[in-house]
Image 1 (cartoon, helix red, strand yellow):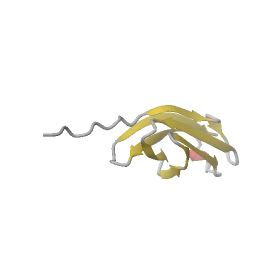
Image 2 (cartoon, helix red, strand yellow):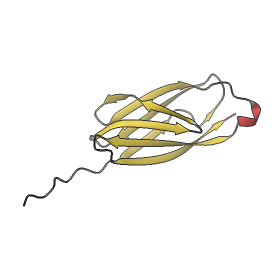
Image 3 (cartoon, helix red, strand yellow):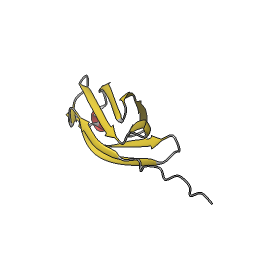
Length: 100
């Protein structure tokens, strides 16, 4: 009986944000480096989720403009990055960004 194929583990190798403290109107660039088998990367902050476009094998990047937020929402937020392969296996990493 043949053994099932072993898939490479999904991993986030590196995560970088151009700014960790931001204000309305700032542009933040995020880059994610993953294992080559990752097909999709998603970023979640508060109630928002965005797709991070693939720019190469195992490389993803996005630019976002910080919206104007009311004073009572200006604080630190966790950003969760989720990487998935085509079989649905995933890995995640969390960092923090502060909105002032």
